[in-house]
Structures are given as C-alpha cells and as structure tokens.
Length: 320
Image 1 (cartoon, one colour):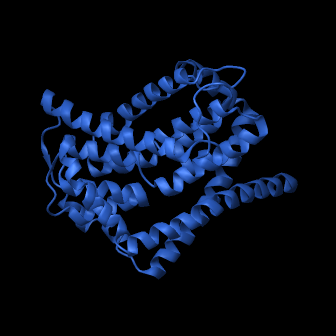
Image 2: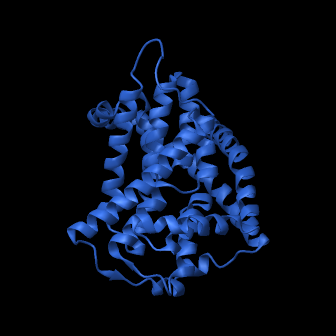
C-alpha cells in the first residue's frame, strides 16, 4: 500500500510540475497585462464588433477578459457591469456560451501545445466557435422569438461572487495563484487515483465501449477516450496533463492527439463551467447541449479533413 501511494504521489507530482512550468509564466504575463490595462484596452477595441452579433459593447470587454484570464475573470467583469448591463435571456446565454468556448487561452492552449497540437489552430477553433455560435444563438432566438425576456444582473453586485473577486492587489493575486496551483496538484492526485480505480474495476473499458459510437462518428481514436473524457467533464488542464502522459506511453499519432485536443479545446469543464453559467441565468440548452453538438460536428469535420492514413499524410497540426 505504501509503495502504491508513493508511486501515485510521484506520478502526480511529475504531471503537476509539467503543468506548473507552463501555467506560472503565462499567469504572470496575464497579470502584468491586466495591471497595464492591456486586457481592458483589447476588450474596448473589439466592443463595436459585438454589435455585429447582436451583443452590447460591454459584452466585448467581458468576453475578452475571460479569453485572457478565465471563466472567473469574465464573471468578475460581468459583475462590474451588472448594475447597468441590459441583456435578454438569449443574449446572456450567448455571452455565457462564448465564455465557456473561449477562456484562459494563454494558459490552456499552452498546455494543448505541450500535449502535441498547434496553439494557434486550437485557439482559432475556440475563438471562431465562440463568435459564430454566439451570433447564431442571438440570431436564431430573435428569429424564433424565444428567450427574449429581459434578465436582471443587479443581484450579482451583492453576491458572494463579487466578494470573491474583490481582491485585486498583488498579495491577493499571489495567494490566489498559490492556492490554484496547490488545488491543481490535489485534483491531479485525486484524478489519477480515480482513473486507476476505474481501470482496475473495468469501468473504463465499459465506458469506452459506450463511447465508441460517438467516437467513431467524430473520428476520435477510442484509445484516447478515457483521458479525453476526464478533460471534457472536469477541465482542459487535467485532461491535457493526462494526454501528455498517455501520448508518450501509447505513442498516439499526431492525428489522434490533435482530434482529442480539439475535443478538449471546444468542450471541457462541462460540470463546473456549465454549473456556473446556469447560476448566472444562462439557458442549459445553449451553454451545454449546443456546445457539445457543435464540438461533435467540428471534430467530425476535422477528422474527415485529416484521413486516418498509415503514412500520416493529411492536415498538419503541429506545435506552432
């Protein structure tokens, strides 16, 4: 038992250090960008473009904040505009969908790059999906006359979320970053333990069998199902770390790595992120069902653009 736990901790630490080397420099760079006002400046620059997809200018600042800092950064920005921002249920759901599609790109896509897929291609997939899907939701709901009731966000300014996001000083950021990294290690440890239990009990094999029709439809290698599923449900950070390890262990070809990471890039953190968006008032069909359906379609198209050939010829998706 002691040997098993020691091996588990060493493996968890190895994965954590791999992630920390990627995450920490990016987190520092994003913090500097926030302090210099660069994130806010970019948000205001693209704000007029939001009007083209039926969202108010403030939505651009909220979304870009999330693109650079993460889901909770976007929520903090949303809280800042909550007293005056006027949105319909469709617009709020579209904005929340854009946030879950494209957030924390500097950190998360750096992990994707380390796992074996292009930073720029996967980032482009996420941004493109966010903009196109957000615009489609607003357009469709307006045409169909659904989700057109106004929503009030004023309650957010007195919520626990506002209190949690109030500390913006350097010391608060250091403590928050240290806590996040520590929590990442704990989650990796728990996930590896869970995956081992699932593997030993045969649950992984049964779940993979259930996923096979969907995987075949999207073109994803069934061998990548277990680790991809972890990321889809819990987050790209943890799924990406496991893919880094599994890709080396099972020698996944470039096509398998790219399709698995495309899945993770577009649909990950379905439990936590979706729950948070629903708490804000977003529609579940928009932020969950639509997101997964779009991911299935996009990955299916990518799989057909990159045929499964023995010689590996096809779409190039290196680590650029």
